[in-house]
Image 1: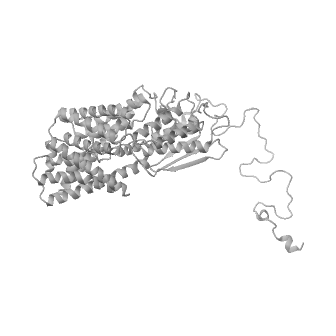
Image 2 (image 1 turned 45 degrees about the horizontal axis):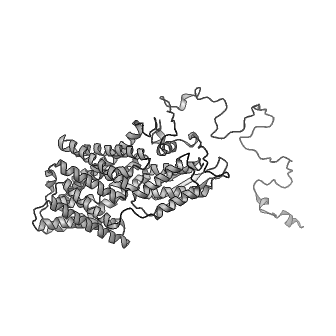
Image 3 (image 1 turned 120 degrees about the vertical axis):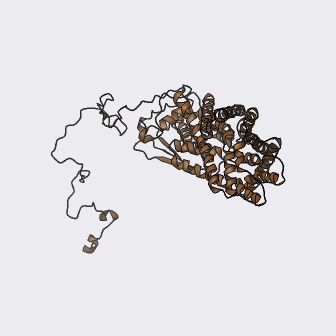
Length: 543
């Protein structure tokens, strides 16, 4: 070999920065490299005589005692201990553990349904993501979706899992131990549909999986999930269209309409529903569907005014708006914001804004042409709504019932949500018409009772609270304030219109916050399925 060939590197290893130069002899030790943390040679360090195995970052140090711990980083009042008992609903147990740091979560008990060789981690994560997808697409709040995903993972022994939910993306990560690589999976939610029957079936599956005495294998869970996806909606299309018309008619009675107004609002809402279905079949986005669906009720109201029929045209238009206002998405968006899921809350509220703008565009187009054609529409008619307690209570219950049908609820829950909606209107009417409270305060109190009763009924059945609350807030939606704000804008009275629209936004926020507050009160202070103390939603101020 020549001298030039001897100097030429023979491999990539020869060019490494840690390769000893030529002529330097390396000792027989395993490694001669040191770091700044290495002890100098000749320094004797006393070795521990303890036979305890080496721990991890999650292992309590030896000699450590909670009673003797330094309070340097502990709040003055101390950090409350959370006791998780087995008789609590899985929603509360999983939600509480999600708000704990990973090191403080109790390890799950091994269930008999887990095979001896351990669960198939990728298939468990796939099942978890599919369940979370159905819940998120059905309108469930982000925190409840995370709690359900966490419950599914823990039921199969995957305790070191971290679910993450945003508006369109679900992801979950599982780390077997501190030295193993994590396993991650994600799923995108592209289609959303309102089917509370399917939502209730998913909750029953999660409840069965969380039951320590059940023996549901992974294949059985997949089979039940596939059966849920194949099931048809409980109500046919013609029933949904009729329910949309009855909802609009009942809403028109709430704001002072008579029989003719009831029929006119019903026909306008049914026509708008059919046009929206036609647009959906052609692939148009939901923005245009809402725009088209808002036009027929407004057109019928303007037509009745132009033909000088002695009816309350404003009640016809308001009734049509009740069937379109996105109350479900609004409540879910505000709930996500109050529980700390700000990205999902922002996306949901932006979706609500787009739907609302679509309704505004559809109604404003009809009102603009109606005003130019000489239609005498009076924005001050909103102040002349006379209370009719018996008719309004019956109309509010009919509105809640038809709203429940539109949400594809189970038949067993329709009666409960109908009564809940009637109670909400009684409370609102007693405070606003009799007690002369502001409509915002009356709406907030009534919505709080809706959330409280809905949470109690959901805890009684170990199910989601959405089927018991969403339809019950239907009578409280700000349909009249929205209409009169749009009418004032169409008549070039922009300032007055913006004030009315701001009132509608205040009423909508009062509904959403009231429902969420009622749910939280039921968890905090009632003994039915609620822990004694819950960690706050803000993890940085959890004490």
